[in-house]
Image 1 (cartoon, rainbow, N blue to C red):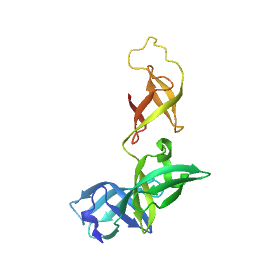
Image 2: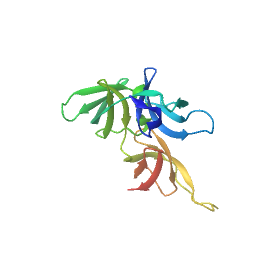
Image 3: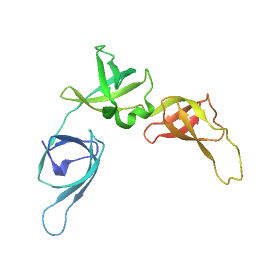
Length: 185
């Protein structure tokens, strides 16, 4: 248990049976009345962000998660299979469990998985991944004042905006946090 006054960014808490990560917090001490803590909490299951206010003396159940590195192996039907490199155990996950991470998931990539009570609650991709461009239109330089971009389809199926000089067959580096192009490799 942790006091609401001690909440910090990144802390995982159990609220009404669902796990939330503290995204933001603000400790407020008004002139009248008791102190309280305003928070923004992100659900680890759905990714939804909610605002919640706690009394500063309120006790909240904090959660300890286990972190493991898993390697993505392959997709079969609606399941995506990952392997624990230490035990060689294969773990199937659905598209719903992977969420937005699915856009940049490539075979043999290593991800960080957070476990709670032996179940995966969150998958974190590497910050940067290198992916091949499988489709894009040729870029034509026109009367542009600033950088011009065009859509490019990547080997994982994701579509990102790339500069005009990127062509089909090029390999690019993508920031998985924002889903944006960084550089051509």
